[in-house]
Figure (spheres, rainbow, N blue to C red):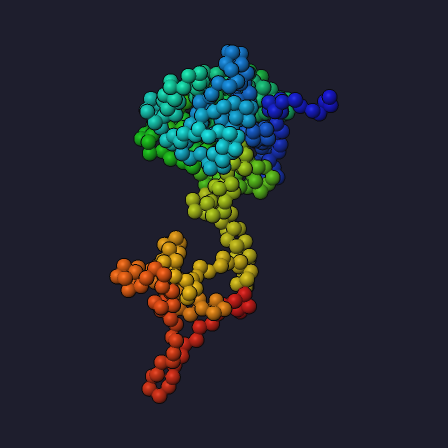
Length: 440
């Protein structure tokens, strides 16, 4: 068999590239050192959680747990995707903020049992994913609860491998590692493994604005909200050991999503949490006054392809005010240029919703109700516009039995000036022109 052939999908996990982000707009400007991205989204399941899933599956096998045993998995969705990719049967506990793209992917992997949980639920509350998961496992014989946050799984070897890759790929010259923090496992184990080899390395923890992981106290945790997935908590996770993080940096949703967009434009297809981490790496590099020889590595945890309805949607980004001023200006300029001096045909507008004068009153009322219209245009021969029918008038006529549901619309429609109006000695007629693709 060829050495290029890999027998199982799990054998492709790890050994992800480490690349310079200097070619990405807005990353290296004004920064003396080099910012490198560890492309964890290039794992087969498109996230760093492939590493975690691989080691959890190995531990399940070591415990003698059957491959057919159902797993109840809590988390934003990437770990569940990775476990499903490795052939495991799942029930997923997903926060409300999890994107529809990940839900669709899970369903395509055969996962049909998906429970949505409350964003920011506190440990011990009935709404917390852990409590929900334990209740499910209690009533499902043979099922196993999987939750990184609880520390029930030994993930040290998983992150030892990642740390070894970073040291090898940088030839042991790495000044700082920047990563988003959620469960705390990656931060804890990578900090331990890297500092054992590189004692002077700085570990920079990234969380969204309003997250409480790096705080000593929590003020009204239920009021904390953010959009960026996969990082941040309303409380400090138990898996995060004190002293693992040397510096905390909070990043707003706008900065995170805007930077993620710039990464995509630069050919680095990473998601919003990676955008937050790269933005934090730049903040750290500027504030630390790095030397030209300094190196800062950033963990890019998952793929932008999980966010087609959010990160990759111009309309969604604009609606949530997540683009910075320059990106908004660029987008508006593009849209203006696209439609400047465009003809009606160029606009490719959808066909107008109309009824024929011969359609029934019942059909016209149903059409207006379906589209939530208060009125509908009426067309005559050659689909020329000859009048309109209002929903209120049509319903009144039908309710009072003045019109029958089968009566044609032409009997009750309002026509556009069917005859000239006499004003004094002059005849006045209003003309209505049909708009076509040839209309100037």
